[in-house]
Amino acid sequence: MSSEQRTWGGRFEAPMHELTRDYTAGMDRDLWEFDIAGSIAHARMLGRQGIIPAGDADAIVAGLEQLRERFRAGQVPWQPELEDIHTHIEANLHALIGEPAGRLHTARSRNDQVALVNRMAVRALCDDAVAGLRELLTVICDLAERHAADPMPGYTHVQRAQPITLGHHLLAYGEMLLRDRDRFLDARRRVNVMPLGSGALAGAPYPLDREFVARELGFEAISRNSIDATADRDFVAEFCFAAAMTGVHLSRLAEEIILWASSEYAFVRLPDAFATGSSIMPQKKNADVAELARGRAGRLIAELVAILTSLKGLPLAYNRDLQEDKTAYLAAGNTLIPSLRIFAAMLPALEFNLERMREAAGQGYALATDIADYLVRKGMPFRQAHAVVGGLVRLAESRRCELNELPFEAYREASPLFEPDVLEITVDSSIASRDVPGGTAPNRVREAVVALRREFAAR
Ligand code: ARG
Image (cartoon, rainbow, N blue to C red; front, top):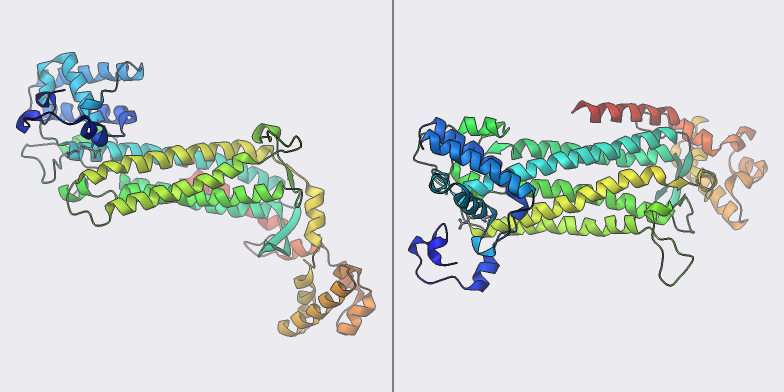
């Protein structure tokens, strides 16, 4: 393409090197829907305000609607010499309706145009993420309710610590993902500001009705500063952070599924539909879905770091570095949303080995804290009780037995406060005793499920 055919070709004499053409091309071809919607609203406003002839505005709108159908049908080829999606749409509109197309870019710069498209795209991605999280939270609440009283070992330092319920453990992820959902909703509020009318950076010398454009496109507000509106991408960074945080949460859950599916834990059997095999080892069934979700969390973090690094040190206002914003948020959305979907499908299909989890919950002196609490209830200061039970653990370890396999005499010797009912401390009694708001007692878990469901239905 010669320089005159470019939207900005007028002041150029020599043609562009094809390496420059390819190097500067936008990664934005999937954003046509947003750009067309934005242009339709802009053209309508220009017509209503008498900035361009009403007939031209109508022709532009009709042409853009026709072009939208062509994009939907995959009939608009990508021409690298046209640089980005904005110029593609303008050039195609020109081919379609001729002369009036030349008035569409009145009172507009690609700098505010791309800010608009970005905000519409990130807003849609926030909505997708919220929907994906809602689906996953529904699944987690259902599972937590079903397993509200099923014991498993709770861990700290990957050492068995205290018995908990599977429902309580799953709800921990429910709480994290609910906050993630809130982060997307929160980010969406700041995304939902309409930048068009900012021009290249200074505003536009026409009597624009920016509020009209905002209403047409479903924006809550219009931007207050044209430089900020064209130069900042903090909303992209916020989206990328929310995505990275969600990815990190999913990754921790993924890691646990991987561990639990190992023969060392044997807490879950992977459903065939969500596992893969080995090309050499016939016996293998691998948790590749979880491993990929764990791996992709790394990429989500990378997108956040990429956008922050691009912004750092950029002078105001627009610089071409900002074109890289799309790579970050599109990759983040395309990485996160499928992970949310597949987790919502996979979790209900996991087969928990509840018997094995229950058995493991009582092993490894997991009831030691409960025995110390027993002494506290008999009047002993906790620190002293801790030491007494520590001695019993040492004794049990030397006899290679569990605490409840020690004879009652051993308890009596350790403290006269022990009565035979100390041997009635079980995994179930331990769990039931943690009956505080936020605790693992089954009725508290059921309560928490209700509260969580209420929370995510509320917004
Ligand atoms: N494609 C660019 C972007 O995505 C918008 C074009 C602005 N170009 C310019 N030279 N000011 O950010």
